Length: 173
Image (tube, rainbow, N blue to C red; front, top):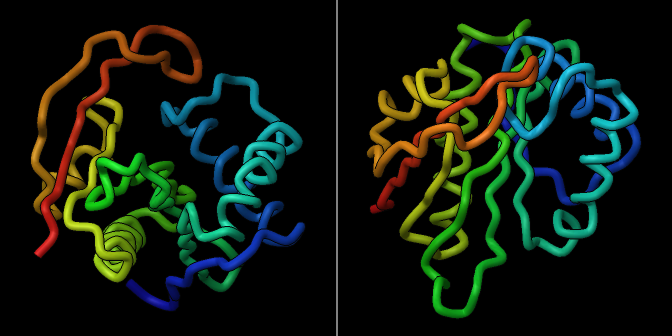
């Protein structure tokens, strides 16, 4: 991986929201099943990120980004705000890498940073879900995540049609 830096955002300004929106739009247009359908525009994508701003600023959600020479090239979230009977657990969500940055280790670096963030917050178990058969699923398996199961027809692909989801977990040392 060359010239990519991972950092945690303490807040979301319009610059970050614009760059995160561009990453989200690129991923959905590239076929990623990440809660949005085609067509997607930057306004709707920016609204998604604005909706997370309060949780990010309050520390309930860690928002990590990968910066390259063009700006934010990828992101992942660690959802730390869990019910009182789950203080040991966090969810990983919306691991997104812009197509311009794929194949450079950005996804791996983001996931390692997410694990480090969870450890620093005292979490010992992480969970996530991803589209079955996706590139992300292969990445998680390579990084040592364990598949817990598959739910058929869980969501839709952005262009339509059912998509199964695979559930993964990782126990942290």
